[in-house]
Image (cartoon, rainbow, N blue to C red):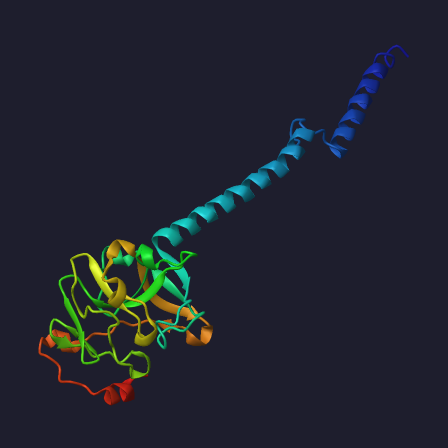
Length: 249
């Protein structure tokens, strides 16, 4: 009996320890050795705030990217005037390239979007869209219903229905200063352009329209004419208005 007496407390202790270990194995205490992080109300309450911060961060980054692209790379523009018919019709949308003109200067035949002189500015600030006809250093003359660049008659198949090109004021000849552009609309009879307000400084130009993207059935690149008659440097023979009309799109 005395040999068995001392074993009883140890047995109880072993059983008690075993029982506690059994309970720990069944449901590990959070934060116990080998367990997971302890549950706290603070961690649960911080999780929504972390998600909200990520959403705000994403929105701010998206807005910054959008503003950088629109101000320095490209910008959509809705045609609101009839002066570029039929090349561009009202309510068509074009993409204006604002980046490449910094290292690839405007060319004759480019279609540009620009802020007009103050006297011709629209009340809502709508910019104008026209075609570049004369560059810095050019002499632009309008007579006999045609445009002449440095004495060479310009071939312009894009003109609306082969219209004649005339002037409305007394001036019919311009020497274009360096850094300026002489612009005209393709719809010559319905365009307020350099014939009335003179050459436009390049600093007023927003960018070069290069892509018509809406409506989808009009999607396409706005190509720039090459004007081979100016490359040869030889005056072009006179072209009758009827011939221009048959060649117009």
